[in-house]
Structures are given as structure tokens and as C-alpha cells.
Length: 114
Image 1 (tube, one colour):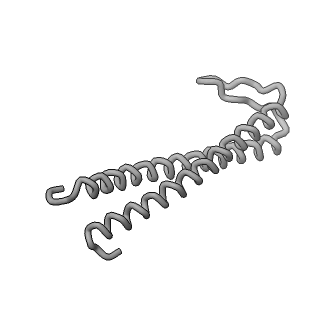
Image 2 (tube, helix red, strand yellow):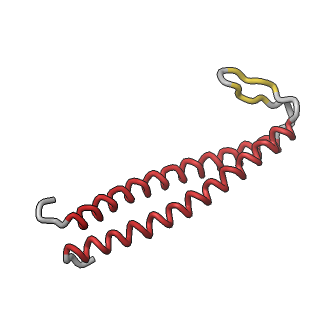
Image 3 (spheres, rainbow, N blue to C red):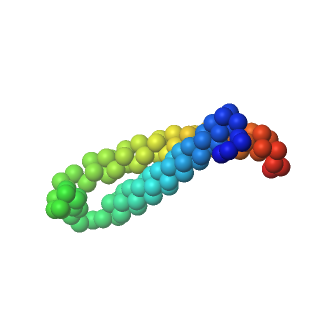
């Protein structure tokens, strides 16, 4: 970065860091959305099931005595994940705005059109 002011170097570093944070938040949100969909499918299948239900506990399956309690637990977990997803969406929006502002500032400082 020879011939670039320290302020512009700092903005470029912030830009790159913001880009990485945005990618991480986006990846985490996508993973959590998949997790929530899986929980919702599990609750749906649990509602349809008429026989015994088993739950994974490490490397073994354990018979569930109270299917309704398990269903409630899964629904609560899905709700918690949903709240976390909303938080990640807000974080993504904030990071995207910062990313775009830095992009604009860097282009302006370098005299490049957007």
C-alpha cells in the first residue's frame, strides 16, 4: 500500500474486516436457519408419529416417555434459534451498511467511480 495515506490504509483494513464479519454472520445465519427448519420438520414428524419415539443421546437412542414434553422442548429450541436468527439478520444489516459506507469512502478517496 505504497503511496496511500494511513487513513485510507485504515479504511481498507476496516473494509476487509467488515467483509469477513459479514461473511461469518451470513454463514452463521444460514446454518441456524437450516437448524430451525430441521427442528420444525422433527416437530412435524413427531406430531404424526403414533408409535414409540426415540431420542439420540450421544451414541445411543433412548426411548422417550413423554412425547408432548419432547415436542414442547423442540418447539422452544426452534423459537430460541429463531430469535438468534433475527439478531444475526440485524447484525448483517448493520455490517452491510458499514461495508457499503467504507466502500464508498475508499472509492471517493482513491478517485474511482462506483
